[in-house]
Length: 206
Image 1 (cartoon, rainbow, N blue to C red):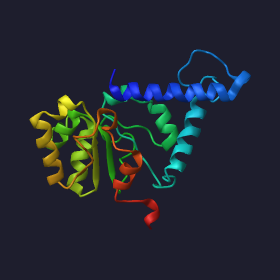
Image 2 (tube, helix red, strand yellow):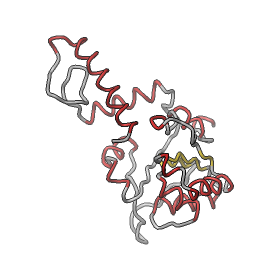
Image 3 (cartoon, helix red, strand yellow):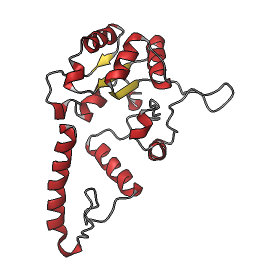
Image 4 (tube, rainbow, N blue to C red):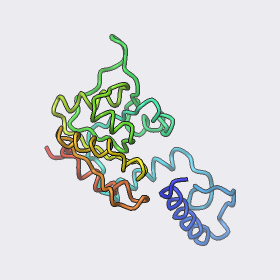
């Protein structure tokens, strides 16, 4: 298991121990790792509420009027497309649409690719658009739309010469890359506040 996942689970365990003490006799001991404040199972409404709370704390509510999520076909295995559609009001797009079907991709003020894997970073940099998400990134740079990329991969992969060349190529294309090769493994992804601040367009900028 990646060290970042281990660290997150340990943090969750500490939070749960504190929540158990605070709840006292109201605590439901169901043996679950991720629960409400009284130990009961989480449902979608709890996740949406906590997501809104985190956005409010990070001061990112109302940043954009419209958010559309894109994913590689493999990436859809690691997300909940239905939940993301409910949160954004837009379907998660991972495949090219056939002519005359579906709705076109809305015009973008900015594109955030986060997290972007070792494989997708290299594909994007070298123009290997073999899936919709990477093809879209290539196309958006051609249109001059601001693109922010946040790579995430093992240090062993990040040390590969091709990866460094790809990052240089992306920066040369005008893509903003947020990546610190010296960061500890559990902090390879920057804080969300830093990621949000990297986006050059805000809907409330008027």
